Image 1: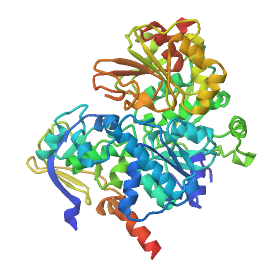
Image 2: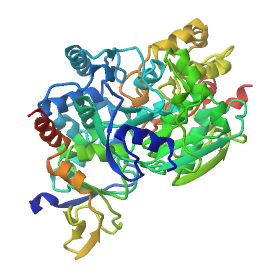
Image 3: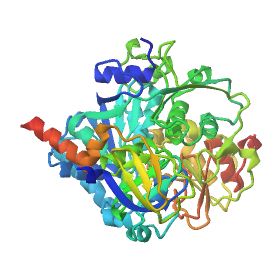
Image 4: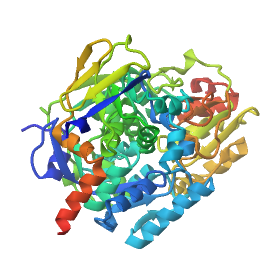
Length: 171
Length: 420
């Protein structure tokens, strides 16, 4: 069970106000195929993004207001299917936050100093609220998500959660 | 006991008194999806494996984003939505060209004071102009509401913004909301309900209130809301919604706010949000002269007759500059018809504007008037992010309808006060 709440990967850094138009431009919203969306993720500011994530840089660390703008869930789908395992940011825009939880992508609010650069090995312990950079022996703490939200993430998102609830009701 | 209007609305929907920070499940009055968010919601419903609609009369489907279809892919998404609507007997279906979802929620009487409206579009906060609690969500949340009629939410803290004074000539509610966003910042109201109040708001018509609430999300807010008053009831009566004084939900005098801000509009100037941030706001006079390729007048922010009148005042007797494509798109067919019967549209066409049927169109760069590399647009819409209206090297400056019109006739970003 604990394994589910542990994420190991490498760091990929971005700045403040990464908006959903940058994560996935509107011209790609005519697609619902996750693979197509993933291939265009972050295209506006980092055309090499899909390649970087595939090479193992799968934990995004960003600044303030990550995911601001449109409600397009395609943004979370694009990042998740590109291989992103978790996003750490100083703060998140609220609709993006909901969408990520609903699709089972863990988000963590925490400020990580700039000296931690791209490619560093990172371990995230969602339940106990710890981020560890093993090579530096550095540890950062964050407030874990409320149990209610962790439960949704644990079921891979709101769909699994809803299915259980609705099936229980119809029985 | 004292509560804000937002607390009161959520308390009513949960059946018990709520406090900011509580995570609660609320019953929703209405849910809306469009042609971008709807198809993904249908996928979610399919994955859940239970085909049903909680209440077909309380689901609104609007095809407005890539409408009429701009590609085979979007045509297929539209077909999917039409099939869904037919299968479940969804009464409130708006096919392409009827209008932008937020304008429709307002003018067709879906947004009522004290109700909770969930919309799979970030600008659902627009309905707050009538005292409804509008919540923008993504597709999975929308699917969940379509299935169950309920949603979980965190009760927001409220921020109060008091606005006083009279607007100077050529200055409008758009300049006000841009200057507020510039002051508060793109994340300054994250998770909060922003309540706009004060004598300026009380004097303001519904169109201006819609512009203001529409952009609450650009400072991160969960919603923007204005306490309903006589003007609200008058508007609702005019569109055929039967109303009475019990609809006047208001914040208690001693309600608690996390922050109270005050602004005076008397000295306010025409403002512009400079790319690539909505909170990068300056007076137009400080950045005048930037050469412009395209002007867009429309969107859920500024696509109403009141906005077109501001444009006409400047454009009348003048010509759109040869170097500029000036695209005008009314926010709904009703607004379009009104503008036609008032003779506004023919005047705009005579001046050289290109007028199209209602759609989100250029605002999100998917359709109609997409920008090429290094092109510059001045727009009355709500976002100026990288690549928002097209190429990642294009630029969008956000302004009021008057500034857009002044820019269209000169070909350069222009302060509308020059067009006296």
